[in-house]
Length: 135
Image (tube, rainbow, N blue to C red; front, side, top):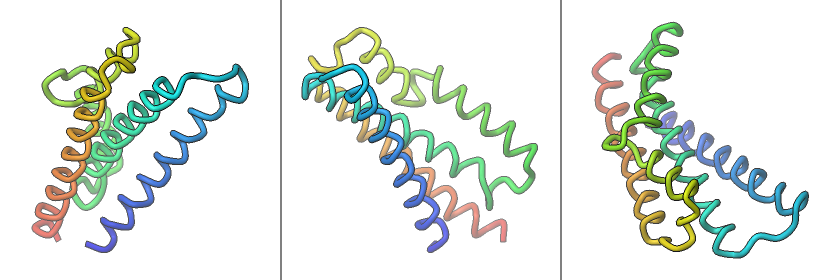
């Protein structure tokens, strides 16, 4: 349990750091964005990052012990997260950003983030339950 919490916390801290860098660099290089655009970008980055952490938990130990199998499972889950409208909040988040409607619909974007956090909680529960059974 402690390893899972530490691993998840480290991944989420890394996600937050990468999000901060990816949001601050364009501000420095190209100028100012509005607060709404900045917030929408931050929420979208964090949503996709949290889904990525959930995918990483599902294709790592103790669920998948072989590296090759973990790679295949990881690729399949990433494709499913990117293309599966009914599986992941990532396609809807990317569509909101691509159509420039993310700033007009912040509640939808925050709702997608809540779904991503729920996915992370579910992935953690799966790792806890199935990981104990495999040991």
